[in-house]
Length: 296
Ligand SMILES: C[S@@+](CC[C@H](N)C(=O)[O-])C[C@H]1O[C@@H](n2cnc3c(N)ncnc32)[C@H](O)[C@@H]1O
Image (cartoon, rainbow, N blue to C red; front, side, top):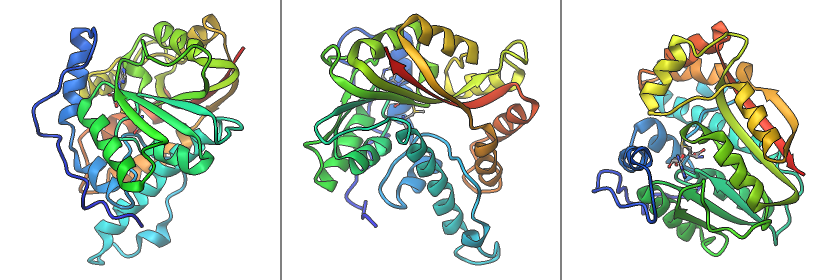
């Protein structure tokens, strides 16, 4: 287990500017993530030093949770939520295909870098992450230094719609719950540019279900809570098709994420948005999806 005591928190410091042009919305999002220090993210990351800003998948291990009256029960619940979040990242990485040690991969909207560290540990490859938040990039780079992998894992403050990466350089790229902040046509055009032909793009995201008709009240509530704009499943597939990204797998992981939300709703780390996720997943208006696509 990795000690994280030297990982200073800077989330409450003044926001840092985004280099280059940024829209007022992007500056708002940078401010949001610069200031984000919810216990549900930080206490889970403290478990083993992998800091995620995404949700979990998989069955809850009730044996690991133990007795609710136990004085350690809160700690066990946090460890279990974290295990499910890391399982989600492993699932995404498992769809990237064969990545070699010399390959470069891109984490678009990398947050505090948990998925980047896991990608390097799994493939030995170079990982470049971009985020709008300078605080997150600092945090991710500090963690990489603490782990001695700073030559392979690097986060920078940058708009994922306009990255500095060479055309056709990336073997794979992904968005882990970060597509709802951008226009999908612009996003997939940039992934398509940086990916080599035959490269793989993967996203895990919440999307509204066209079968429901329009975004439900729960989806609107989630948008307001996170200041984002959830897209429909149809928009993903259309924007990919328009940008030379051909889906190889589309997996509805909604049933796999519900146990995470139901567990989280019972914890002291609730943020108030849990019911909107649970209700919308159950009424079918919202889906948690993995899409893996080949760059052709
Ligand atoms: C919900 S967090 C996900 C973080 C990370 N992918 C994870 O799984 O832990 C959303 C992330 O998207 C980033 N983001 C949103 N819009 C962006 C943009 N236009 N360019 C770069 N990053 C962006 C935010 O800065 C934040 O890091």
